[in-house]
Image (spheres, rainbow, N blue to C red):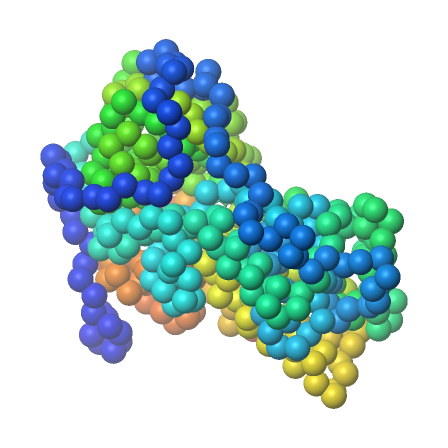
Length: 493
Ligand SMILES: Cc1cc2nc3c(=O)[nH]c(=O)nc-3n(C[C@H](O)[C@H](O)[C@H](O)COP(=O)(O)OP(=O)(O)OC[C@H]3O[C@@H](n4cnc5c(N)ncnc54)[C@H](O)[C@@H]3O)c2cc1C
Protein backbone atom coordinates (compact mmCIF):
# COMPACT_ATOMS: atom_id res chain seq x y z
CA UNK A 1 0.00 0.00 0.00
CA UNK A 2 2.74 2.46 0.95
CA UNK A 3 4.61 1.82 -2.28
CA UNK A 4 1.46 2.38 -4.30
CA UNK A 5 0.94 5.69 -2.54
CA UNK A 6 4.56 6.71 -2.88
CA UNK A 7 4.82 6.68 0.90
CA UNK A 8 8.07 5.83 2.66
CA UNK A 9 8.24 2.14 3.47
CA UNK A 10 9.39 1.55 7.01
CA UNK A 11 9.87 -1.80 8.65
CA UNK A 12 6.66 -3.27 10.09
CA UNK A 13 6.15 -3.58 13.84
CA UNK A 14 7.77 -6.75 15.15
CA UNK A 15 5.42 -9.27 16.61
CA UNK A 16 6.75 -12.00 18.80
CA UNK A 17 5.73 -14.32 21.54
CA UNK A 18 6.91 -14.73 25.09
CA UNK A 19 9.40 -15.07 26.58
CA UNK A 20 10.68 -11.58 25.82
CA UNK A 21 14.25 -10.89 24.75
CA UNK A 22 16.93 -10.32 27.38
CA UNK A 23 17.77 -6.77 28.44
CA UNK A 24 20.84 -5.30 26.77
CA UNK A 25 23.44 -3.03 28.33
CA UNK A 26 21.74 -0.07 29.96
CA UNK A 27 22.97 3.10 31.58
CA UNK A 28 20.91 4.30 34.55
CA UNK A 29 18.89 7.52 34.33
CA UNK A 30 19.99 10.69 36.03
CA UNK A 31 17.01 10.54 38.36
CA UNK A 32 17.83 11.58 41.90
CA UNK A 33 17.84 8.48 44.07
CA UNK A 34 16.85 8.21 47.66
CA UNK A 35 18.87 6.47 50.33
CA UNK A 36 18.26 2.79 50.65
CA UNK A 37 14.71 1.94 51.51
CA UNK A 38 13.59 2.46 55.04
CA UNK A 39 9.88 2.00 54.50
CA UNK A 40 8.51 -1.15 53.01
CA UNK A 41 4.84 -1.48 52.16
CA UNK A 42 2.80 -4.67 52.26
CA UNK A 43 3.47 -6.75 49.19
CA UNK A 44 1.98 -4.93 46.23
CA UNK A 45 -0.13 -2.56 48.28
CA UNK A 46 1.72 0.56 47.26
CA UNK A 47 -1.34 2.72 47.87
CA UNK A 48 -0.36 2.89 51.54
CA UNK A 49 2.93 4.57 50.69
CA UNK A 50 3.17 8.34 50.59
CA UNK A 51 5.14 9.94 47.75
CA UNK A 52 8.60 10.93 49.01
CA UNK A 53 9.96 12.99 46.15
CA UNK A 54 13.20 14.84 46.76
CA UNK A 55 13.00 16.49 43.35
CA UNK A 56 13.19 20.30 43.48
CA UNK A 57 9.83 22.08 43.35
CA UNK A 58 11.23 25.18 41.66
CA UNK A 59 13.50 25.50 38.64
CA UNK A 60 17.09 26.23 39.58
CA UNK A 61 18.97 29.12 38.10
CA UNK A 62 16.38 31.86 37.57
CA UNK A 63 15.00 33.38 40.81
CA UNK A 64 15.36 37.16 40.53
CA UNK A 65 16.66 36.82 36.93
CA UNK A 66 13.15 36.39 35.58
CA UNK A 67 11.94 39.64 33.99
CA UNK A 68 8.94 40.24 36.24
CA UNK A 69 6.26 42.71 35.43
CA UNK A 70 6.76 45.63 37.86
CA UNK A 71 4.11 47.98 39.20
CA UNK A 72 5.65 50.99 37.43
CA UNK A 73 5.71 49.23 34.01
CA UNK A 74 3.36 49.98 31.15
CA UNK A 75 0.35 47.72 31.55
CA UNK A 76 -0.30 47.34 27.83
CA UNK A 77 1.06 44.39 25.84
CA UNK A 78 0.36 42.99 22.42
CA UNK A 79 -0.50 39.60 23.91
CA UNK A 80 -1.15 38.33 27.43
CA UNK A 81 -0.66 34.57 27.73
CA UNK A 82 -2.53 32.98 30.64
CA UNK A 83 -0.55 30.00 31.99
CA UNK A 84 3.08 28.89 31.99
CA UNK A 85 2.56 25.23 31.10
CA UNK A 86 4.20 23.76 27.98
CA UNK A 87 1.64 25.47 25.74
CA UNK A 88 1.82 28.95 27.30
CA UNK A 89 5.61 29.13 27.51
CA UNK A 90 6.19 27.84 24.01
CA UNK A 91 3.71 30.32 22.56
CA UNK A 92 5.08 33.23 24.63
CA UNK A 93 8.60 32.44 23.44
CA UNK A 94 7.54 32.08 19.80
CA UNK A 95 5.58 35.33 19.84
CA UNK A 96 8.34 37.30 21.49
CA UNK A 97 10.82 35.91 18.96
CA UNK A 98 8.65 37.56 16.29
CA UNK A 99 8.80 40.96 17.98
CA UNK A 100 5.43 40.74 19.78
CA UNK A 101 5.29 42.22 23.31
CA UNK A 102 4.15 39.44 25.62
CA UNK A 103 3.33 39.06 29.29
CA UNK A 104 2.86 35.55 30.65
CA UNK A 105 0.72 35.30 33.81
CA UNK A 106 0.89 32.23 36.05
CA UNK A 107 0.53 31.75 39.83
CA UNK A 108 3.95 30.09 39.91
CA UNK A 109 5.94 30.54 36.69
CA UNK A 110 9.04 28.84 38.11
CA UNK A 111 7.37 25.72 39.54
CA UNK A 112 8.44 22.41 38.06
CA UNK A 113 5.50 21.00 36.05
CA UNK A 114 3.79 18.16 37.87
CA UNK A 115 2.95 15.79 34.98
CA UNK A 116 5.10 13.02 33.58
CA UNK A 117 5.20 13.49 29.82
CA UNK A 118 6.04 10.76 27.33
CA UNK A 119 6.60 11.47 23.62
CA UNK A 120 7.91 9.67 20.54
CA UNK A 121 11.56 10.62 20.11
CA UNK A 122 11.11 11.52 16.40
CA UNK A 123 8.54 14.14 17.45
CA UNK A 124 11.08 15.89 19.67
CA UNK A 125 13.83 15.44 17.06
CA UNK A 126 11.67 17.35 14.60
CA UNK A 127 11.32 20.15 17.15
CA UNK A 128 15.03 20.29 17.97
CA UNK A 129 14.21 19.38 21.57
CA UNK A 130 15.65 15.91 21.84
CA UNK A 131 18.12 17.07 24.50
CA UNK A 132 15.09 17.87 26.69
CA UNK A 133 14.35 14.13 27.03
CA UNK A 134 15.83 12.72 30.21
CA UNK A 135 15.51 9.08 29.15
CA UNK A 136 14.84 7.30 25.87
CA UNK A 137 13.98 3.70 24.98
CA UNK A 138 14.89 2.43 21.51
CA UNK A 139 11.67 0.42 21.29
CA UNK A 140 8.20 0.27 22.71
CA UNK A 141 6.23 -2.84 23.54
CA UNK A 142 2.50 -3.64 23.42
CA UNK A 143 1.23 -6.72 25.23
CA UNK A 144 -1.92 -7.67 23.36
CA UNK A 145 -2.84 -10.54 25.70
CA UNK A 146 -1.14 -13.23 27.77
CA UNK A 147 0.28 -14.96 24.71
CA UNK A 148 1.23 -12.15 22.37
CA UNK A 149 3.39 -9.02 22.44
CA UNK A 150 4.32 -6.61 19.69
CA UNK A 151 7.64 -4.80 19.64
CA UNK A 152 7.47 -1.41 18.00
CA UNK A 153 10.51 -0.07 16.22
CA UNK A 154 9.97 3.51 17.32
CA UNK A 155 11.97 5.18 20.08
CA UNK A 156 10.08 6.68 22.99
CA UNK A 157 11.24 9.25 25.51
CA UNK A 158 10.37 10.73 28.85
CA UNK A 159 10.39 14.49 28.81
CA UNK A 160 12.76 16.06 31.33
CA UNK A 161 10.23 18.43 32.86
CA UNK A 162 12.89 20.68 34.33
CA UNK A 163 14.96 20.62 31.14
CA UNK A 164 12.09 21.50 28.85
CA UNK A 165 10.69 24.21 31.10
CA UNK A 166 14.16 25.68 31.60
CA UNK A 167 14.71 25.70 27.83
CA UNK A 168 11.40 27.45 27.18
CA UNK A 169 11.89 30.00 29.97
CA UNK A 170 15.41 30.73 28.73
CA UNK A 171 13.90 31.37 25.30
CA UNK A 172 11.31 33.68 26.87
CA UNK A 173 13.94 35.57 28.88
CA UNK A 174 16.26 36.04 25.91
CA UNK A 175 13.46 37.35 23.70
CA UNK A 176 12.00 39.71 26.32
CA UNK A 177 8.82 38.05 27.64
CA UNK A 178 7.60 39.60 30.91
CA UNK A 179 6.22 37.38 33.66
CA UNK A 180 3.56 38.19 36.21
CA UNK A 181 3.09 35.91 39.21
CA UNK A 182 -0.67 35.79 39.79
CA UNK A 183 -3.81 33.96 38.82
CA UNK A 184 -6.05 35.46 36.17
CA UNK A 185 -9.54 35.89 37.58
CA UNK A 186 -11.38 37.63 34.82
CA UNK A 187 -11.03 38.48 31.15
CA UNK A 188 -12.82 41.52 29.73
CA UNK A 189 -13.17 42.79 26.18
CA UNK A 190 -13.66 46.06 24.39
CA UNK A 191 -13.86 46.41 20.63
CA UNK A 192 -10.11 46.48 19.93
CA UNK A 193 -8.61 45.66 23.31
CA UNK A 194 -8.94 43.04 26.04
CA UNK A 195 -7.76 42.94 29.62
CA UNK A 196 -7.13 40.43 32.38
CA UNK A 197 -7.80 41.09 36.03
CA UNK A 198 -5.38 39.19 38.26
CA UNK A 199 -5.68 37.81 41.79
CA UNK A 200 -3.38 40.60 43.09
CA UNK A 201 -5.63 43.29 41.61
CA UNK A 202 -3.29 44.07 38.70
CA UNK A 203 -5.05 44.66 35.39
CA UNK A 204 -3.10 44.01 32.18
CA UNK A 205 -4.31 45.14 28.77
CA UNK A 206 -3.52 43.56 25.41
CA UNK A 207 -4.73 43.31 21.83
CA UNK A 208 -5.13 39.58 22.36
CA UNK A 209 -5.49 37.29 25.37
CA UNK A 210 -4.41 33.69 24.84
CA UNK A 211 -5.70 31.14 27.32
CA UNK A 212 -3.10 28.43 28.00
CA UNK A 213 -4.37 27.60 31.47
CA UNK A 214 -4.99 23.91 30.76
CA UNK A 215 -7.99 21.62 30.96
CA UNK A 216 -9.60 23.39 33.92
CA UNK A 217 -9.98 26.70 32.06
CA UNK A 218 -13.18 28.68 32.42
CA UNK A 219 -12.29 31.37 29.88
CA UNK A 220 -13.17 29.47 26.71
CA UNK A 221 -16.71 29.15 25.39
CA UNK A 222 -18.43 26.27 23.63
CA UNK A 223 -21.61 26.33 21.59
CA UNK A 224 -22.14 22.57 21.51
CA UNK A 225 -22.61 20.06 24.37
CA UNK A 226 -19.21 18.93 25.67
CA UNK A 227 -19.49 15.17 25.27
CA UNK A 228 -15.87 14.42 26.12
CA UNK A 229 -14.39 11.04 26.66
CA UNK A 230 -11.93 10.88 29.55
CA UNK A 231 -8.58 9.29 29.99
CA UNK A 232 -8.01 8.49 33.64
CA UNK A 233 -4.85 6.96 35.08
CA UNK A 234 -2.97 6.47 38.32
CA UNK A 235 0.80 6.66 38.00
CA UNK A 236 3.72 6.16 40.35
CA UNK A 237 7.43 6.59 40.03
CA UNK A 238 8.52 3.78 42.29
CA UNK A 239 11.52 2.05 43.76
CA UNK A 240 10.81 -1.65 43.50
CA UNK A 241 12.62 -4.84 44.53
CA UNK A 242 12.47 -5.97 40.90
CA UNK A 243 10.21 -5.85 37.86
CA UNK A 244 9.81 -8.13 34.85
CA UNK A 245 10.22 -5.59 32.04
CA UNK A 246 13.09 -5.26 29.56
CA UNK A 247 15.12 -2.13 30.18
CA UNK A 248 15.40 -1.24 26.49
CA UNK A 249 11.65 -1.09 25.91
CA UNK A 250 9.02 1.12 27.38
CA UNK A 251 5.66 -0.58 27.78
CA UNK A 252 3.18 1.46 25.78
CA UNK A 253 0.24 -0.77 26.63
CA UNK A 254 -0.08 -4.00 28.58
CA UNK A 255 -3.59 -5.37 28.01
CA UNK A 256 -2.99 -8.65 29.86
CA UNK A 257 -5.65 -9.45 32.43
CA UNK A 258 -4.42 -12.66 34.07
CA UNK A 259 -3.84 -10.65 37.27
CA UNK A 260 -7.60 -10.47 37.68
CA UNK A 261 -8.04 -14.27 37.72
CA UNK A 262 -8.95 -14.29 41.42
CA UNK A 263 -10.96 -11.08 41.24
CA UNK A 264 -14.15 -12.00 39.34
CA UNK A 265 -15.77 -8.61 39.97
CA UNK A 266 -12.74 -6.62 38.77
CA UNK A 267 -12.25 -8.97 35.84
CA UNK A 268 -15.82 -8.61 34.61
CA UNK A 269 -15.57 -4.83 34.81
CA UNK A 270 -12.19 -4.86 33.10
CA UNK A 271 -13.62 -6.96 30.28
CA UNK A 272 -16.22 -4.25 29.65
CA UNK A 273 -14.14 -1.14 30.41
CA UNK A 274 -10.53 -2.22 30.07
CA UNK A 275 -7.44 -0.58 31.53
CA UNK A 276 -3.83 -1.22 30.57
CA UNK A 277 -0.46 -0.73 32.20
CA UNK A 278 1.94 1.90 30.82
CA UNK A 279 5.46 1.50 32.14
CA UNK A 280 8.80 3.26 31.75
CA UNK A 281 11.56 1.11 33.28
CA UNK A 282 14.55 3.30 34.21
CA UNK A 283 16.62 0.54 35.74
CA UNK A 284 16.07 -2.77 37.47
CA UNK A 285 14.61 -1.09 40.56
CA UNK A 286 13.30 2.27 39.38
CA UNK A 287 10.20 2.35 37.21
CA UNK A 288 7.26 4.58 36.31
CA UNK A 289 4.04 2.56 36.31
CA UNK A 290 0.64 3.86 35.28
CA UNK A 291 -2.67 1.97 35.14
CA UNK A 292 -4.65 3.72 32.43
CA UNK A 293 -8.15 3.78 31.06
CA UNK A 294 -7.50 4.88 27.48
CA UNK A 295 -10.90 6.50 27.11
CA UNK A 296 -14.23 6.11 28.90
CA UNK A 297 -17.49 8.04 29.04
CA UNK A 298 -18.57 8.53 31.77
CA UNK A 299 -15.15 8.42 33.30
CA UNK A 300 -14.09 5.15 34.96
CA UNK A 301 -13.89 5.43 38.77
CA UNK A 302 -10.39 6.34 39.97
CA UNK A 303 -10.70 3.85 42.86
CA UNK A 304 -11.35 1.07 40.32
CA UNK A 305 -8.20 2.03 38.37
CA UNK A 306 -6.13 1.87 41.56
CA UNK A 307 -7.58 -1.49 42.65
CA UNK A 308 -6.73 -2.99 39.28
CA UNK A 309 -3.21 -1.61 39.55
CA UNK A 310 -2.70 -3.20 42.97
CA UNK A 311 -3.83 -6.56 41.58
CA UNK A 312 -1.62 -6.20 38.51
CA UNK A 313 1.56 -5.30 40.38
CA UNK A 314 1.01 -8.15 42.83
CA UNK A 315 0.57 -10.59 39.94
CA UNK A 316 3.68 -9.27 38.15
CA UNK A 317 5.69 -9.71 41.35
CA UNK A 318 6.41 -6.00 41.59
CA UNK A 319 6.94 -5.14 45.23
CA UNK A 320 6.97 -1.40 45.70
CA UNK A 321 9.50 -0.23 48.28
CA UNK A 322 8.98 3.50 47.89
CA UNK A 323 6.71 5.74 45.92
CA UNK A 324 8.81 8.71 44.82
CA UNK A 325 6.03 10.51 42.96
CA UNK A 326 2.42 9.82 42.17
CA UNK A 327 0.06 11.39 39.67
CA UNK A 328 -3.62 11.35 38.99
CA UNK A 329 -4.08 11.81 35.29
CA UNK A 330 -7.46 13.01 34.04
CA UNK A 331 -7.58 14.18 30.44
CA UNK A 332 -10.76 15.27 28.68
CA UNK A 333 -10.56 13.93 25.12
CA UNK A 334 -12.48 14.80 22.00
CA UNK A 335 -15.78 16.61 22.31
CA UNK A 336 -16.49 19.70 20.25
CA UNK A 337 -13.95 22.38 19.48
CA UNK A 338 -14.36 25.69 21.27
CA UNK A 339 -16.62 28.20 19.48
CA UNK A 340 -14.67 29.55 16.50
CA UNK A 341 -13.98 32.44 16.61
CA UNK A 342 -14.27 33.97 20.08
CA UNK A 343 -12.58 36.91 21.83
CA UNK A 344 -10.12 34.81 23.84
CA UNK A 345 -7.69 32.69 21.84
CA UNK A 346 -6.59 29.30 23.21
CA UNK A 347 -3.61 26.97 22.97
CA UNK A 348 -2.83 23.67 24.67
CA UNK A 349 -5.29 21.71 26.79
CA UNK A 350 -8.02 24.30 26.47
CA UNK A 351 -7.88 24.59 22.67
CA UNK A 352 -9.02 21.14 21.50
CA UNK A 353 -5.50 20.08 20.46
CA UNK A 354 -5.35 16.99 22.67
CA UNK A 355 -5.45 13.85 20.50
CA UNK A 356 -9.01 12.52 20.83
CA UNK A 357 -7.98 8.86 20.63
CA UNK A 358 -4.79 8.88 22.71
CA UNK A 359 -4.75 11.85 25.11
CA UNK A 360 -1.30 12.91 23.85
CA UNK A 361 -0.77 16.61 23.35
CA UNK A 362 2.65 17.92 24.37
CA UNK A 363 4.58 17.39 21.13
CA UNK A 364 1.70 18.60 19.01
CA UNK A 365 1.24 21.77 21.06
CA UNK A 366 4.94 22.52 20.88
CA UNK A 367 4.72 22.06 17.10
CA UNK A 368 1.58 24.18 16.63
CA UNK A 369 2.58 27.11 18.85
CA UNK A 370 4.93 28.55 16.19
CA UNK A 371 2.12 28.25 13.61
CA UNK A 372 -0.22 30.22 15.86
CA UNK A 373 2.53 32.70 16.73
CA UNK A 374 3.09 33.35 13.03
CA UNK A 375 -0.60 34.10 12.46
CA UNK A 376 -0.72 36.42 15.48
CA UNK A 377 2.45 38.19 14.36
CA UNK A 378 1.01 38.68 10.87
CA UNK A 379 -1.92 40.51 12.46
CA UNK A 380 -0.27 42.41 15.31
CA UNK A 381 3.32 42.74 14.24
CA UNK A 382 2.83 44.33 10.87
CA UNK A 383 1.55 47.72 9.85
CA UNK A 384 -1.70 46.00 8.95
CA UNK A 385 -2.98 46.50 12.50
CA UNK A 386 -5.61 43.76 12.44
CA UNK A 387 -7.51 44.01 15.73
CA UNK A 388 -10.80 42.97 17.33
CA UNK A 389 -13.10 40.55 15.49
CA UNK A 390 -10.95 40.19 12.34
CA UNK A 391 -8.00 39.32 14.60
CA UNK A 392 -10.00 36.70 16.50
CA UNK A 393 -11.24 35.27 13.23
CA UNK A 394 -7.72 35.06 11.81
CA UNK A 395 -6.09 33.47 14.85
CA UNK A 396 -8.78 30.87 15.51
CA UNK A 397 -8.80 29.84 11.87
CA UNK A 398 -4.99 29.87 11.91
CA UNK A 399 -4.98 27.24 14.63
CA UNK A 400 -7.97 25.36 13.26
CA UNK A 401 -8.03 25.64 9.45
CA UNK A 402 -10.63 23.43 7.75
CA UNK A 403 -8.22 20.58 6.95
CA UNK A 404 -7.07 20.39 10.59
CA UNK A 405 -10.69 20.37 11.78
CA UNK A 406 -11.43 17.56 9.34
CA UNK A 407 -8.52 15.41 10.54
CA UNK A 408 -9.64 16.06 14.13
CA UNK A 409 -13.07 14.70 13.18
CA UNK A 410 -11.32 11.55 12.07
CA UNK A 411 -9.34 11.19 15.32
CA UNK A 412 -12.61 11.82 17.10
CA UNK A 413 -14.14 8.94 15.16
CA UNK A 414 -11.23 6.84 16.46
CA UNK A 415 -12.18 7.80 20.01
CA UNK A 416 -15.86 7.01 19.47
CA UNK A 417 -14.86 3.61 18.07
CA UNK A 418 -12.59 2.85 21.04
CA UNK A 419 -15.42 3.79 23.41
CA UNK A 420 -17.50 0.98 21.92
CA UNK A 421 -14.90 -1.75 22.25
CA UNK A 422 -14.61 -4.14 25.18
CA UNK A 423 -11.29 -5.69 26.22
CA UNK A 424 -11.24 -8.29 23.46
CA UNK A 425 -12.34 -5.78 20.84
CA UNK A 426 -9.65 -3.36 22.01
CA UNK A 427 -7.01 -6.09 21.81
CA UNK A 428 -8.05 -7.01 18.29
CA UNK A 429 -8.06 -3.36 17.30
CA UNK A 430 -4.49 -2.72 18.48
CA UNK A 431 -3.32 -6.05 17.11
CA UNK A 432 -4.39 -4.85 13.65
CA UNK A 433 -3.39 -1.22 14.23
CA UNK A 434 0.25 -2.00 15.03
CA UNK A 435 0.42 -4.32 12.00
CA UNK A 436 -0.18 -1.32 9.74
CA UNK A 437 2.61 0.21 7.72
CA UNK A 438 4.45 2.28 10.37
CA UNK A 439 3.95 5.39 8.25
CA UNK A 440 0.27 5.13 9.16
CA UNK A 441 0.41 4.22 12.82
CA UNK A 442 3.25 6.67 13.50
CA UNK A 443 1.33 9.37 11.68
CA UNK A 444 -1.96 8.56 13.41
CA UNK A 445 -0.44 8.66 16.90
CA UNK A 446 1.41 11.90 16.11
CA UNK A 447 -1.56 13.61 14.37
CA UNK A 448 0.49 13.93 11.18
CA UNK A 449 -1.78 12.35 8.56
CA UNK A 450 -3.87 14.20 6.01
CA UNK A 451 -7.52 13.32 5.66
CA UNK A 452 -6.74 11.28 2.51
CA UNK A 453 -4.07 9.32 4.39
CA UNK A 454 -6.49 8.72 7.25
CA UNK A 455 -8.97 7.16 4.81
CA UNK A 456 -6.20 4.97 3.41
CA UNK A 457 -5.31 3.99 6.98
CA UNK A 458 -8.93 2.93 7.59
CA UNK A 459 -8.98 0.75 4.51
CA UNK A 460 -5.67 -0.77 5.45
CA UNK A 461 -6.83 -1.33 9.04
CA UNK A 462 -9.93 -3.12 7.78
CA UNK A 463 -7.70 -5.24 5.57
CA UNK A 464 -5.45 -6.19 8.50
CA UNK A 465 -8.32 -6.82 10.92
CA UNK A 466 -9.22 -10.33 12.02
CA UNK A 467 -12.75 -11.56 11.18
CA UNK A 468 -14.13 -10.74 14.68
CA UNK A 469 -12.50 -7.32 14.43
CA UNK A 470 -14.12 -6.74 11.02
CA UNK A 471 -17.40 -7.75 12.64
CA UNK A 472 -16.76 -5.18 15.43
CA UNK A 473 -16.09 -2.49 12.85
CA UNK A 474 -19.19 -3.31 10.80
CA UNK A 475 -21.53 -3.55 13.80
CA UNK A 476 -20.14 -0.82 16.07
CA UNK A 477 -18.78 1.86 13.77
CA UNK A 478 -21.71 2.93 11.56
CA UNK A 479 -23.15 5.46 14.05
CA UNK A 480 -19.83 7.26 14.73
CA UNK A 481 -18.99 6.96 11.03
CA UNK A 482 -22.23 8.65 9.97
CA UNK A 483 -21.62 11.36 12.58
CA UNK A 484 -18.10 11.92 11.30
CA UNK A 485 -19.23 12.14 7.68
CA UNK A 486 -21.93 14.63 8.70
CA UNK A 487 -19.42 16.76 10.62
CA UNK A 488 -16.92 16.60 7.75
CA UNK A 489 -19.62 17.81 5.39
CA UNK A 490 -20.45 20.68 7.76
CA UNK A 491 -16.79 21.66 8.09
CA UNK A 492 -16.22 21.77 4.36
CA UNK A 493 -19.40 23.71 3.46
C1 LIG B 1 -1.08 13.68 34.67
C2 LIG B 1 -1.05 13.98 33.20
C3 LIG B 1 -0.13 13.33 32.39
C4 LIG B 1 -0.05 13.64 31.03
N1 LIG B 1 0.84 12.97 30.26
C5 LIG B 1 0.96 13.30 28.95
C6 LIG B 1 1.95 12.65 28.15
O1 LIG B 1 2.66 11.75 28.60
N2 LIG B 1 2.10 13.05 26.86
C7 LIG B 1 1.31 14.04 26.32
O2 LIG B 1 1.50 14.39 25.15
N3 LIG B 1 0.34 14.62 27.05
C8 LIG B 1 0.14 14.28 28.35
N4 LIG B 1 -0.83 14.89 29.09
C9 LIG B 1 -1.79 15.79 28.43
C10 LIG B 1 -1.31 17.24 28.26
O3 LIG B 1 -0.16 17.22 27.45
C11 LIG B 1 -0.98 17.93 29.59
O4 LIG B 1 -2.15 18.12 30.32
C12 LIG B 1 -0.26 19.29 29.43
O5 LIG B 1 0.24 19.64 30.69
C13 LIG B 1 -1.16 20.40 28.95
O6 LIG B 1 -0.36 21.55 28.80
P1 LIG B 1 -0.95 23.02 28.94
O7 LIG B 1 0.21 23.93 28.84
O8 LIG B 1 -2.07 23.18 28.00
O9 LIG B 1 -1.59 23.09 30.41
P2 LIG B 1 -0.95 22.85 31.83
O10 LIG B 1 0.27 22.01 31.75
O11 LIG B 1 -2.07 22.36 32.68
O12 LIG B 1 -0.48 24.29 32.31
C14 LIG B 1 -1.42 25.29 32.63
C15 LIG B 1 -0.73 26.38 33.43
O13 LIG B 1 -1.67 27.43 33.62
C16 LIG B 1 -1.68 27.83 34.98
N5 LIG B 1 -3.02 28.38 35.26
C17 LIG B 1 -4.18 27.72 35.46
N6 LIG B 1 -5.19 28.59 35.68
C18 LIG B 1 -4.64 29.82 35.61
C19 LIG B 1 -5.18 31.13 35.75
N7 LIG B 1 -6.47 31.34 36.01
N8 LIG B 1 -4.34 32.19 35.64
C20 LIG B 1 -3.02 32.01 35.37
N9 LIG B 1 -2.46 30.79 35.22
C21 LIG B 1 -3.27 29.70 35.33
C22 LIG B 1 -1.38 26.57 35.76
O14 LIG B 1 -0.85 26.89 37.03
C23 LIG B 1 -0.33 25.91 34.84
O15 LIG B 1 0.97 26.39 35.13
C24 LIG B 1 -0.94 14.59 30.46
C25 LIG B 1 -1.88 15.22 31.28
C26 LIG B 1 -1.94 14.91 32.63
C27 LIG B 1 -2.99 15.60 33.48
